[in-house]
Length: 72
Image 1 (cartoon, helix red, strand yellow):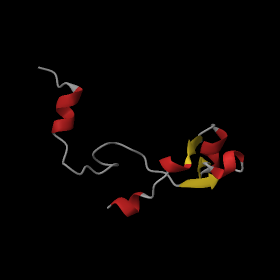
Image 2 (spheres, one colour; image 1 turned 90 degrees about the horizontal axis):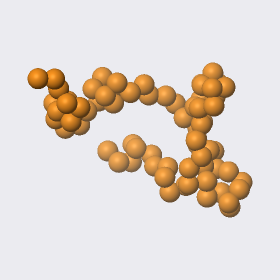
Image 3 (cartoon, one colour; image 1 turned 30 degrees about the vertical axis):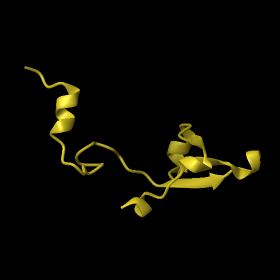
Image 4 (spheres, helix red, strand yellow; image 1 turned 180 degrees about the vertical axis):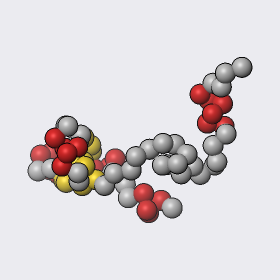
């Protein structure tokens, strides 16, 4: 019987490593408050200029940005 995606998740450790267990490629990001909307929005950009040329950025509200080091 083939594994269903939900079955694969059950096999992961309770605190999976983002790179080795989940296959994520971690990148460095810059967070720049915008001057529009009174600074309530943040422009999130990769520090790697090549990725920036590929339109790799997002704009989020300030409440969506959290330092994950504070969550450990």
